[in-house]
Length: 340
Image (tube, rainbow, N blue to C red; front, side, top):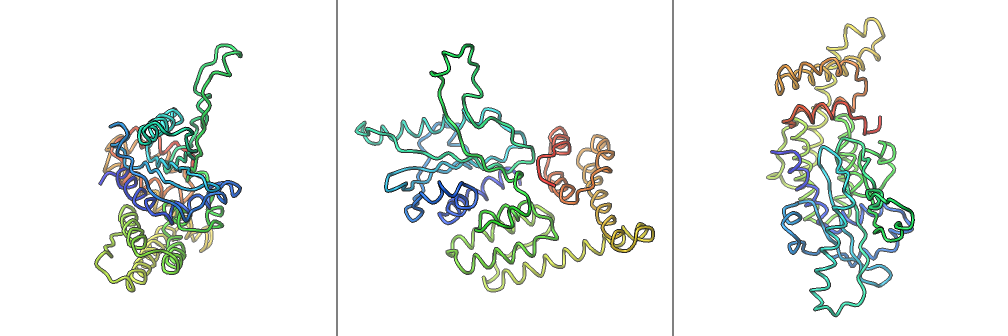
């Protein structure tokens, strides 16, 4: 399965639940703004009326909401492209202008004032997001007196790779936990899953629990852990999943201990184990790159040998397992967007 399409569909399905949208805005948007939204009035709108370019996208969502009693909208664009779109501000504005035009037509031109739209871009890629947030940053202004006539527009960015592990841990809600699952190491997953289970069982409706379980199973398969829990009774799902995760983690530790045995004689048991785990992961990444890209993959081995961050090695392994383009893999290897 194409990883971008999997991510698009999985994220879109989850953010089609009002609870997920509420959690996203409460966790990642300024409290001064988030507290103004009446989340009890959230209502998903159809986006089928827009042009073919946008209709083909599976990651755009419009939510109707109330701001201080007035009609407003939240537009969420989920971006999974391997490269950053420099003209994202233009793309988002184009969509919103089409949306506004449709509102005018829908009201049979009786609308006197356009409602506010809060545009949010959720970025899940590896590269650092360096695209301008403001449209005017993309426009050449040859002389100052023209500046007042340049359109003003800005979108709100939520980039997964800009949040530290500690920052995500401190956040509440399913959206933050989803980001932790997407970026955490295998060793961290059992703890994160336990937190997710507590939230789902205590607060989430049945449909959201089902969709989150489906997304989680696919995420784990993408990481190489084959799980199929869709036919398992709900009371058995998470105990079984946690048992599988713990075993998978233990298997990795055993492998790491074997790899690090020689190093351990020199540096002590603890340091040897850590170095062995890193070495084992680096070797796995090398073999995967060679299998997928041949000589081109072997040409990247020197860069892999100097990577010391375990989380980064795991992210590259996941990327290499699904990447079909060597150039994109090279960019991912050279990118240092995610926090250490």
